[in-house]
Amino acid sequence: MKLTIGVKLFLAYFIITASIVWFATDKISLRITNGIDQAAEEVMVDSANLLAQMVSSNIKDDEINVDEVRAIMSAYLNRELDVNIYSISKKNPNLQIYITNQDGIVVYDSKGKIEGEDYSQWRDVFLTLKGKYGARSSAYDASIEEPTADQKAHHVAAPIYHNGKIFGSLTVIKSVADLKPYVIAQKDQITEYAIYVLLISLLFGAGVSFVVTRGTRKLVKYTTALSKGETVVAPKIRQVEFAELAQAIEKLRVDLEGREYVEEYINTMAHELRTPITGIRGTAENLLMPMSSSQREHFVNNILDANKKMDMLVNRLLNLSRIERRDKLENVEKIDVKTLIKDVVQAPSRKGNISRRSIKIEYTIERDFSIKAEKLLAEQALSNIIDNAIDFTPPDSTISIKVSESNTHVNIQVQDQGKGVPEHARKQIFRRFFSSSRPDTGKRGNGLGLRFVKKIMSLHGGKVSLKNRFMEDGAVATLKFPIK
Image (cartoon, helix red, strand yellow):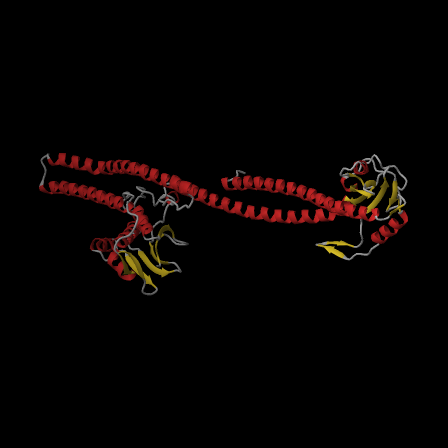
């Protein structure tokens, strides 16, 4: 399946947007994790120094009063809390504390597991006893040699002073697992915002894709119609590039159609005029021969008849040429449909033809209808339809003219009782110069009438159709004038 340009643009936009959102979310999440760690370390520095100062006040006889410190620390660690930090609930203090003397030997451990051990080489104790800032990130449980990220803890130490000298160190420990809920909460919030941003971006991308696709579809529809030889107007497109392309195609169409139009007209006129010209020449040559008055009159009438046909063809071509070059109506007026039909049917030349072929005209008009149209063009359209019906209806038959109204159109139907539209002609009847043989004479028309009617109806914003009657012999032509 081939992807349209709109779908391709949307997919590209989706991939780029999703990549940017993923990258930004990942980086922001990392920064938040680091930020929380740094904030926790800053608070731990304050806590360690505060506790170290408290221990300094519990040194007697150059020794830390471990029993007193143990009692104070136990009281602190056993406090019951009921604290909600945003969505995180905290029920008790969760710091671990250990104290070393000036040699790095642990003299107090809040968990009672490492008292007496030598911690002088651990980074937090080693640096603090040398008067530097001591901190490390290592396993919360010292027995774990290769801890995972969640098994680590932050260790921050502060010096214990006595008589102006470093007497020992105090380290506070905060497990990474205790900070993880805050990190998760922030990451969830960021993920939610990222999803919102992605959805909004995708909606925007879908909108852009739709606009581009709509423009391309209009162009495709327009060019497809042109390739089929249909008369269409260049689409209105808001995008500047597509609008300019549509205008360029329209200009090219006009230029090419103008050239083809002239060539086709010249070829058609040459072809259609060749027969009567040949007839006139042959008849004129016969007139040079000795003949009776009746024979001479017969040949003169043949010349006049051929001249009449040439004149009719030229007039039809000129009328069609003028109408096909128009893009709007002139002198639009309100026309009574019943009057329009009667004027066309009762025209002298048409009335004589109807009478000569013994054709009966029946009217079915539900009520008084009116249309807004250019009167001359409306008469010409209806005249061509009725003339076609007369030509293809056998003598002693009936032509029915019906007028009805739908929600959007006033419909004028002309039904004949001929043989109907042949299968091979159904898709070509409105093409210029296409014509079917008349049943009574076998001759073809000039193929301009129905094309003329289609252009007239198009100018009025209406439609014309010609199809076979249902379950009956004959065809039905319908003129649909819009209700405005």
